[in-house]
Image 1 (tube, rainbow, N blue to C red):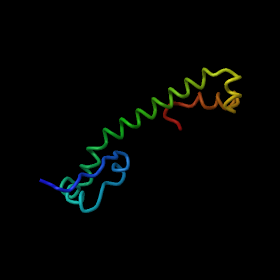
Image 2 (cartoon, rainbow, N blue to C red):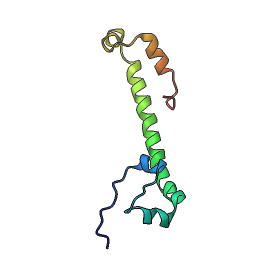
Image 3 (cartoon, one colour):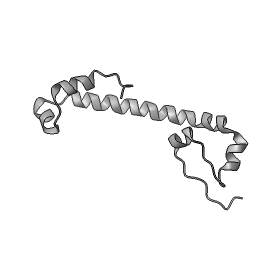
Image 4 (cartoon, one colour):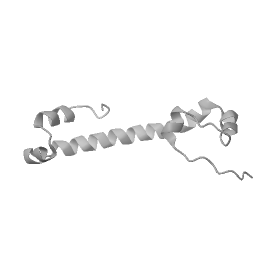
Length: 91
């Protein structure tokens, strides 16, 4: 049994930079960096899909605001139009 604590899980940062150090170096060397990334790839895809869904939802909400509400938040109708015509994958 290990008496050392396991590292905290942070999928996106680990996906780009696999963990290193005394706790994880043995684990990464045993499974290899490419296998590590392959195991985290589904999490990255899920996060990307969630980001796209959130963008689409926010743009739908923005499109429903009237002129008074837009003035309250300091956004012009032209800026709203530019934002809502963007596809969901575009930032």
